[in-house]
Length: 96
Image (cartoon, rainbow, N blue to C red; front, top):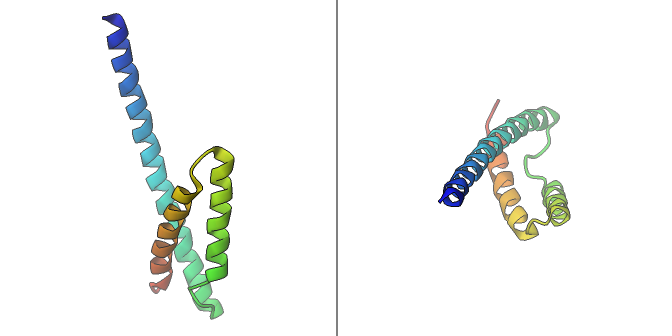
């Protein structure tokens, strides 16, 4: 019986740890989008286009490499990064 309680407590601890990581992830995404907004402002001032396919591909390739190094599915990371990049484009398109 004690083992079941202990395992139940451990399950709750792990769930709380994941919830904390989810909070950090959302915070990191928010910060990344803030930076994308700043980049968009600079691109406007410099007369540069928002869309930069070569840079976007470089970011996704780097993410996939980092994923492989950490034992994470690179395709998952690619998918996530492409979605983040699409969102960042929208942020960069908005006037400051």
